[in-house]
Image (cartoon, rainbow, N blue to C red; front, side, top):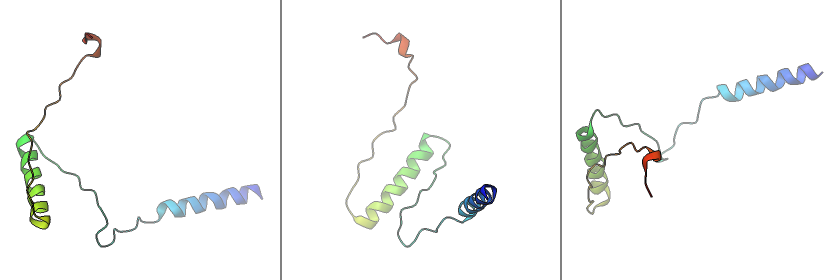
Length: 79
């Protein structure tokens, strides 16, 4: 009896995980992955996205310069 219940549990889990994810409806938020090769390409993509929002909603947006991250060795920081 225990083995049948365990088998049914695994079967139900397999069915749940095999079910396709629901498709987004009308204007549900979605996630897109941006691919770019350098900072200029990223800046161009950002400007295109901002232009789309300005066109849809009006107004203006300020674009800030690209920031650069540097690797810091925490053992060498002097407080």
